[in-house]
Image (tube, rainbow, N blue to C red):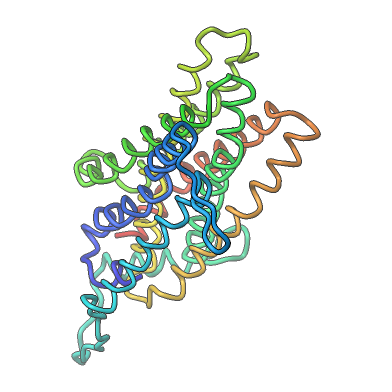
Length: 312
């Protein structure tokens, strides 16, 4: 919300992508560190255990992250300066431009669901956030397990694949400013959600991983489509689009609801994934994720004109 309020609208998606890159690196690149701790403590027998202190491959990442969090808290208190909100005085007699009036008229028009177009677009962006975050949460929950049990990779190997693709995803986020020269936010959401669909589909068409000699490469390609392309860019574009649609209204409350939708999906999708995989098999889960992501991309494509106009 802070970044949304202090950045100009025309470059907001780029700035959102930069801050998303930091967040994304946090939960995709850090598996490198986890794999390193695992290799060090398992192979080197370096674990330490006393009455009040335990240091092994399981607790070392926790200590590492605790130190990082304490450093960040210190830096926030020391260097962060919050923005003081000011309300500019309105000059009497100033009328809206024709373009602004047309956008406001579109925002207040009713949809077939009885909602205004503005409300429908806001809820739509929240739904896209939920489906994309929920889908990648399912992969976070079952991806490593799938790689170990079905393909035969070790946890360190699977973690290295995810972390490598996550690193590429963070780099792609830093390049989003260049991508936005060729695609608007709506286009990025559609095409990079389709990339997530492609990432799930390659796992479906792979068949039985134990009988496919290229299973490791197919799994790597799937993670690349999802972690390097689809999720990071599509998600960042969705945040930018949502913030632009909110416009001059206070960003904090609505972005809070936006984040809540994503957090709720990150909780519910893994639960659903566990039940579906346990009772119906992992291929059924992949088909469900394909359907959910496909519907999301199609919905954004159908509403592309309204979304583009309201984000101007």
